[in-house]
Image (cartoon, rainbow, N blue to C red):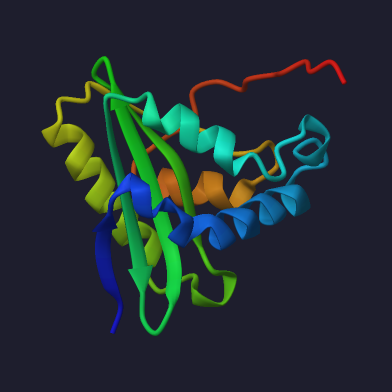
Length: 146
């Protein structure tokens, strides 16, 4: 049976390995992801999450952690910051349940808008988000100087 549990930001290391797997997954989906230097910036991301007004981290586990969702809210804008389910555990409704819990939390906290980003070329994620009524609005380009 899958159990869902909210964890505190000071327990965030629990998801670090899955976050790295998520980065690796994005690298396989987009030729541009690795080129943007996004591989392992976990500590930098933690610093940015610490500055948010409110944050929620939920893990999904059976014998071990098999997924997580991390969301934040600031100025009535909710952001699904990161979502990942271990590849062999997908298509069991875990991602949908994590997103459902986070959308509910963001709405309870007063979010007027909920934003999600995914890497260019990640059509599976785009389809997933459409399936939970989150639709693409723009494509964002980025120029990074090496």
